[in-house]
Figure 1 (cartoon, one colour):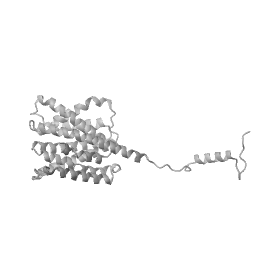
Figure 2 (cartoon, helix red, strand yellow):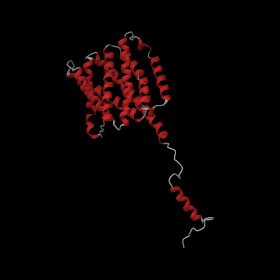
Figure 3 (cartoon, helix red, strand yellow):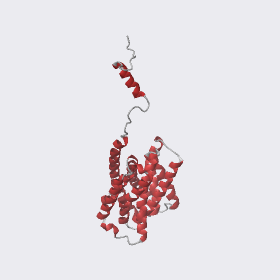
Figure 4 (cartoon, helix red, strand yellow):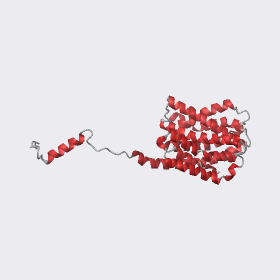
Length: 287
């Protein structure tokens, strides 16, 4: 026969078990569970971002050397649109196989990305064409500062004060190692281009993270902004003086540049844009 709970003073053990079980099922009776997901994911994500950014720095140093050789033979402004075309063509085969997301916010972020890329490209290629390779190098070293400001304002969830300290220390260390980079900085225009390139690179990494938070993948992020930038520069500076024989060399550079941007996009979306840009600041030491 089954035990029946009738005593209010001394219920049988089985009754106490049932009451305890019913108590646990009552709303609010269970003890709150402290969330630990963010703490467990933050370390690996930041480590992955740093690793990807270091690889991006290697690719960026390689493309900087290639770009400098191109400016000695071809007009810099006309190169920009053609190079963006080749960059977009590299990832074009993967475009039909990825999920695409569209919203007013995503479209606005894509347009902001194109604007930042335009500012950066004009500043960097003008400095390379003028022979101010040291100025372009310094712009890379300064980029963690605007990335830190942008992350603190726009992506506060990924920002930590220690990252700002690290960004400043790395920037100072790299600039100290590049004492010869300031030799050609007598003109105000050079400084403006350095600030433009550094700000463009830093804020572009932050916008890349914002796109990732909207669910935009790596391929869509890279292809959309690269294709739009190509259309913009082809209209602004038509490649009238770019020979077809230069296509193999330009496509080879596009492979390296695409690897650089894909690694940087992954680093920004998987971890912190400040960590990614801080690691990327080491590029001048690799050139």
